[in-house]
Length: 160
Image 1 (cartoon, rainbow, N blue to C red):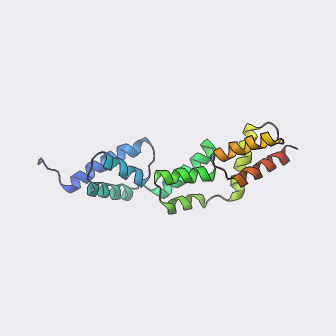
Image 2 (spheres, rainbow, N blue to C red):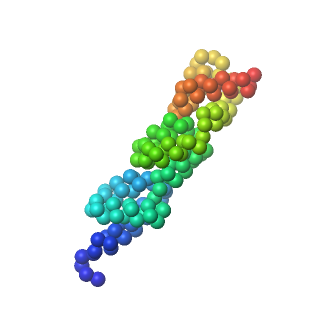
């Protein structure tokens, strides 16, 4: 083999590095692209590697976003606002993010917020301080203030 690798060989080497990086956990296209550039790989080679990883279906922002949304909801109890913010920070495409959120309606998010409260509160939050604490819990998890308020009322109705 010659001392200088061809463009295709460089792309394949970058694909290998990309596979190692995404082997630890799923990543967005942007995360993978930035990591390869950070490793000192030429941008043209990175673009070729990203195209190849997408073609091989190792990178897919839509699948990533859907999986991320499901995991953060189910495993961490996050609300839509927090999930959306994190996906945007990870560089997921806006269309992919919107598609991931299209599978759940507001009523389902309200049920998840109430379920979260059921796990945290043994009785309804009736006093002002208790209500503020409960709203704070939900808002920090990424639920909107409106959803948090509705969840507190629904929780109270279920426990009265």
